[in-house]
Each structure stands twice: as C-alpha cells, then as structure tokens.
Amino acid sequence: MQNNVRYFLVALKRLYKSVLGFEEGTDKLATIEDIKKDISFRGHSAWILMFSIFIASIGLNVNSTAVIIGAMLISPLMGPILGIGLSIGINDFDTLIRSFKNLGIAIFIALFTSTLYFLITPLSIEQSEILARTKPTILDVAVALFGGFAGIIAGSRKEKTNVIPGVAIATALMPPLCTAGYGLATFKLHYFLGAFYLFFINSVFISLATFIVVRYLKFPVVGFVSSKKLKRYHTFVTIFVIITIIPSTIIFYRVIQETRFRVKAENFVNEKCNFDQSELLNYKIKFSDTLSTIDLYYIGKEIDQNKQIFLEDKLEEYGLTDKNWLPMTKVTRLRIHQEKDSLINLDERLSEFHNSFRLNILEDIYTKNNELIKDKDIKIKLLEDEIIKLSKKDTLPFYQLNRELGYHFPAVRNYSFAHAVQLITTPDTSYYDTLPVFLLNFDSTLTARAKKEQIGKSEEWLKIRLENPNVKTLAY
Image (cartoon, rainbow, N blue to C red):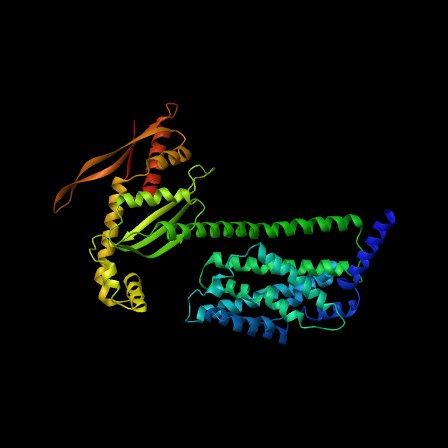
C-alpha cells in the first residue's frame, strides 16, 4: 500500500513537471537584464509615457475603449513595477531604490499630464470609462495578481511571446492614473482616491507576483540576508498585502449588497407597482446602508393613500426594509411622484400613437426637453411640493421615530406629538399656521443644562429627519 502511494505521488510530480512546470526554458540573467533596462524614465521613455497618458486621457474623455487600449499598449509603466518585484526577490537594494524613484517619476508625469489635459478639455462629462475606475474591488486584486504571474512567467522565457502587451491591457495601469488626474482637475477627491487606489493595487500585486515567481525560479541573488531578517521581511510583506486588500474587500462587499438591493427593488417595482389607469413611467433606485430610496413616477389616475400603504407594506416582504436589522435600522423610503389631478384616459390617448412616438412624448414630459410642456412640469413640481408638505404634516413615522430617538437620545424616556397653532404677522397681513411640536420626557437625573442642550440637539435632528424646518421641541 505504501509503495502504491509513493508511486502515485511520483507519477503526479512527473505529470506536474511535464504539463505545468515552467522552469525549463527560463533565461534568468537575460530576464534580469531586460527588467532593469526598462526601469528608467528619461529621454524617449519619458516622452512616450507622456504621449500615452494624453492618448489614454482622450480615450476616457470620449469614452473610447479602443483608444484606451492603444494607450495601454504604448505605455512603458510596467518597467519599474516589475523592477520592484525583481529587486525584492533577488535582494538587490540598489535596483529597488531605482525602481521606486522611477515609479515616482512616472506617477508624477502621468498625474501632471492627465490633470493638464482635463483642465483644458471642453468635454467635462463623466463617461462610463472614467466611473468604472473609481471603485476598485477584490476582483481587481485578482486581475492584477494573475496578470503579474502571466507577465513575469512570459518575460522569463528564452523565446519571447506577445503576453506582455496583454498583461498591460488586463491590469490597466494607465486609465486609473488618468482618472486620478481627472479627479484632481475637477476637484473630486473621491474620484482621485478611488482611481489612485486601483493603480496602487495593480502595482502592488504585479510586484508581488513577480517576487513570488523570481523566488520560485531561484534567480541569482545579489546579496544574502539572514534567516531572521528574511522572516521579518516576509511578515512585513504579508501585513502590507493584507492592509492593501482590506479596502477593496469592503468596496466589493458593498457592491454585492447594492446589487442584491437593486435586484429586489426591481422585482418589487415590476411585480407590485403597476395599477389600472395609472402608468408607471419611470423609477429610480438609490442604495444606502441605512436609508435607501425608490422613486416612482406615475401618470394617470392618482395613487391614493391606500395604494401607498399597500406598497410600503410590501417593502418588508421583498427584503427592502427590515426594522429588526441591528445595530442600525435598514429602511427603504418609497416616494411617489405623479400628476395628481389628471383625468386623462391613458389607454385611449396612447393607443392613437405609434409605440416609438409614445415613448418620445413620455420622455419629453419628464426630461423637460420639449418647450410645449414646461407649464405642465411647473404644475407637477408645485403639486409634488404640496404632497410633500401634506405628508410632513399628517403622516409621521411615529414607530420609526420612537426607535431612532431612543438610539440618538438615550435620555428621552417617551414623547408626545401635537400640532400647535401660531399667529404669523407680516407687514402686509396676518394668518394662522400649524407647527409640529414634540413634547419630550427626559430622565429625571438629567441636569437642567443638559436637558436644554438635549432639547436643542433633538430639535435640529428632527428638522433634518422630517425635512421640516418648522419642527419645535419642548420638555415636560
């Protein structure tokens, strides 16, 4: 039995070497020489980098994937990144310093060039190619790592292949730097940070893949390091890699949560939000960790209070609202926008037109591109404002407010609510108005000064929470 296991392991090792082994055909000295030769940015290489940055920036600006790919093929950015991984793998401190120095020069040239371009370009629209590089995830880490492995393995062969250009395209070193320049030019810090973090991820994991392959192939080392120092270096690298991965993991988790929410929200809209004589024109879904929103745009017969209550009750059924989700409450707010007093029979009106023409009319109504319906848009806005005012006065989420007050203001034991009548006097006229008033009952151990401070803070919070600047709070 033992001999059979040993024979199986030997056969498996031979199979691995014959199919997956890549030690044979490696030109170690030539590989080291080629990588070192491409590290420096001076003269022609600096100009090539600058021109490729301009090309990539133009591609991002006009949303052209082909132009961006062309810029990535021209770019010499891979040199110092491979140099960092190589120098760590062979203990070459001088090459490591030179690689970091030239990578810094390359980053400066790239950011300066792309920022300059986006400052002078008349096209300032945020295209999808730009937005795609502002939220790196753990998947980008995998692309950089596997791309780095492919690049260094192909680069170490005696017979050269066309893998390196493919690696440059897959790992996308150029577009993130150009997007970072866009963030600087438009003073959008979150775009700069997201895009530069993507470039940082690509650089780190291409270097890590290079280091691993260089050590695996046992490239000749320049200087020897004691086992104690080597262990300390390995620990440092491991910690650094983990810290680098953490933000991308968090972003990826958030992307998953948002995707799940959008799927549930779209199912809810498609299955529950269609009513007879009321046509759903459009809907907008906005995800947040605590308070997400679904905006529904209707035309036709009014969506009355009963239908609104029905829709809000169905939110929890679809997993869009969970009042028991701790430590914070996950809530989806449903907002309905409609032409409230319309008596138009949509079926009769819309059946007269061809489908394409009908869609054009409906699009004009809500995008305000047709001058003939500007008066209608103003009327809709006024009616929406009136609906919002009425909803603030008459329908308050008391159950939810009770939970949130207890969370934000633990000293509040309970509260009461009422509408108070106030006389408003102006130079021209006088009239009565109703104000929402909250009566708060505080813990008896609270000092008068602390109670006064809590009243002020709770009033400001309620104004923001209820979107009503007229809210007042009193203590009893």
